[in-house]
Length: 321
Image (cartoon, rainbow, N blue to C red):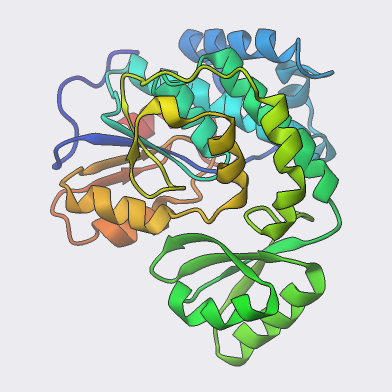
């Protein structure tokens, strides 16, 4: 069963593993797979051991709880998601699906860099734990809103202190900023007939509010020793392929501060002929945006891994198939 896939995959010239940011989590994610897949279970146990020296809770405790409140703190959900994504990537590799390129969205870049061999597991989890702890300082000062509109049409909002935090697709953008200004921005979008949805966070990542965290984040991550890696890392910060040695503490501040150039990154990879995109997450949140760039590619494959409340071994095998 753990060797169901072999050889080339998809119509294009390579496989892309895509790691999303926060938003794909659900209560009990990975719980059933931990008990039914030795590969996933061993990977999660490794993550649990590393996290044990960094946080005051365990993966098994968090994923074993049915209380949705457990996953609400950003400094819990982000490390848990990172561990789950790294473990899911190892599961895909165990059935013969290995990436030629990795792409991460916001915190997803940490997992991507680990899978690419740029960061050790210890370094990756240290980064995401540090990053999420510092984000708690921004709690209550802002928020984020998804808008179904082209990024260019939203540029006027930047004059009022709104940041275009992420461009996920041709008409899929996330705004970030102070709560009152976001309220006005949301009303402005509604007047133009654009659908909006509040992201369930109370902080403004990828905005000027992050500047207050720069010194402490860089100081906490001093001593990182990123390597070139063994898999191509396509940055959504710079929108280009980067050598892994450049992913130092300055890069990880920029990862939290600057716009996520996800749409242009996927567009570039699709235009280069990469035809298989696998979203490495407990629930698909980016597959639709990816598909907007591959819909004209004959035989292109865009698949999720698990789904909300459907996260056992059978679900994984269906995705692999």
